[in-house]
Image (cartoon, rainbow, N blue to C red; front, top):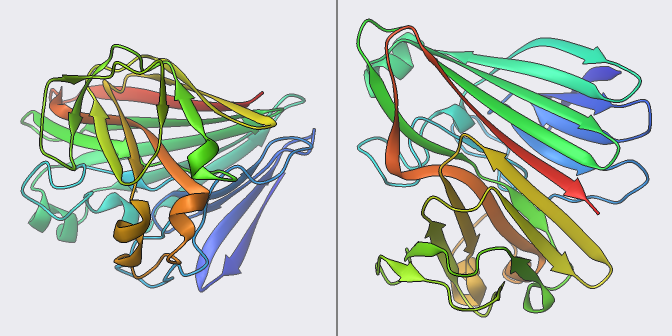
Length: 279
């Protein structure tokens, strides 16, 4: 079941599975803004100060970063997919899950920024305790291209100081706060104390986000890296579309392609997947 509503002047798909799992996806940016597993509360952070305006990204949920992650490239930060309208291609529901598909294709305006013909498909599937987001990038150009990107997932937490991320022990990472590379996480569990911005290079396919009374399993395929980000108290004060204390309520754990751009030959398709499961 799905309904298209107009909220904050943007069209939004309300996706509901038969077992009661729910998700909200804006056509603007192909942006998953909310996810409730069946019988559970909200799992994604969405800022109360989000600016719903064309040309401005939505703060929170799962922004699609394409064809560039952050400033790893020559175009605007995090690319243009998150600030362009996507098309709803269809909604399907079975006894076990509900699925919505969205598409973004190149336009005259995107060609001015990134001179390639492409199509991107986003598939959002919910059911039970799981949210699966899949991204497919097809090269419709006569020449190959390469991209970086991410499913920039903002997770809602009760208290960032009491949250841990398991599964990153002995993983190599780049610290984007200090600029240092080839670091190795020696801690068994990652805890967040202040600003954290790490790219785990060729990261594990599965990590677990844990806090009192709650556990969330994160899995990915196709994406080479994992990004973990929290702006910390000082960084959060400088973000105009977040409350000053919101760093306490969120952490970004992202399936990403950062350090080594993904090449897509002419006529070929790359596919990646991120799955979140409330345990």
